[in-house]
Image (cartoon, rainbow, N blue to C red; front, side):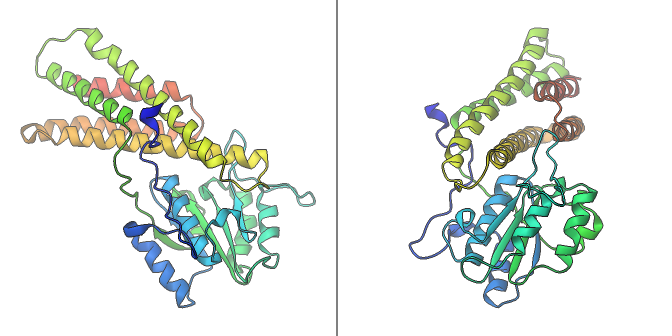
Length: 334
């Protein structure tokens, strides 16, 4: 556990000032710089879609921007910060009953952001994984996007911006948030990447005619896949323990579960992204084999994209990982 204390490339916690919102330091994404300038000049859009590759980076960006808008150090604990997240096994953003006041539903979110600000003059509403709105939820939200409450900024976060209804996308200003360079990764994951590259080299040698036993090819596929899932779970447990301590007291158990699920998905997505990058680095390391390895890389990335889609619909992680590893074995050992 001591080797995982850096929380696997965890986005650095924004440095706290004594009298202002958190700061990215020298890594402020250009999109956020543009939005901060718009805020200072009174031209900040009411509805903003922040999209990128990882939920963690999007959440960090949203909380950073919200902190500046609200003039606070910790946006999530501010009385005029409102959040809406997917919930349930299907990971959907619920519309909620018309008459009942259900927490973490679109109707309750709309009700809250239409209230007057409790502190200061501005409010911020954040919809996490906003692509998880179904058509009913999206249509309920559409009128609010068309006519946002006064002095309210709506932030929609998504790693899949093209899954929105066109009517939702067209009413938001779009800003891409790139994945930050989070520095040195955890030692256990560095070791995993080294072992993964060693296995790829064994497969590549086999394709060149070098003899290898089935045990040298197949067993590592299952072992590496299992280790990656264990790393994902370990990192998630540690990050959730740290994140849970910072949550506002009024958040109920359902919202906490939604936050934890989003955190776990974000960690898994970053692990898969790093795995894909390791494949790319290996494929292009030998210039003489670029043409052959490019075809193999394409097959592996296709398998990666397939399991990403399966995992979005709650397909079992173990089966999805085994599929990716075995497809990679087939592609690289030919």
